[in-house]
Length: 119
Image (cartoon, rainbow, N blue to C red; front, side, top):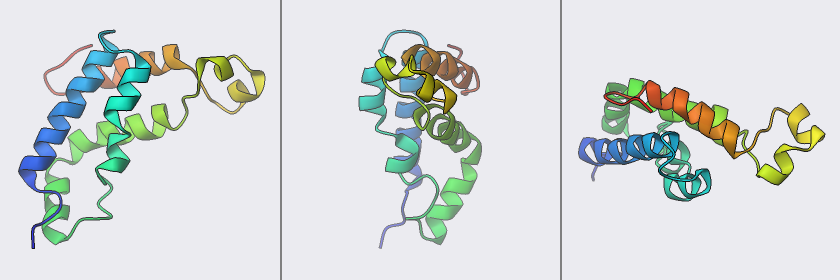
């Protein structure tokens, strides 16, 4: 039985997702396109380890610093972003929600922390 994730698959997925964060932060990809392509990577790739066996857990631990940046995207950007229409509503703002412009600004901060890449 193969371990999940394999190191090769994890590295390819991290590289692809890192690049996507950089591309959106740099304005080359819209936030809507980023969301569609990124597919909530941290959760969809099960980077929290809930689908991993012992070997997979070891792979995740080895790349924990890179994974942490994607957890930050999931927890502090994607979980709090909303449509630009809703972002101007007081009830959404009071709940800490924000639109695409703020989401991209926050992605720039994350991109600055990625290995080898500034926004």
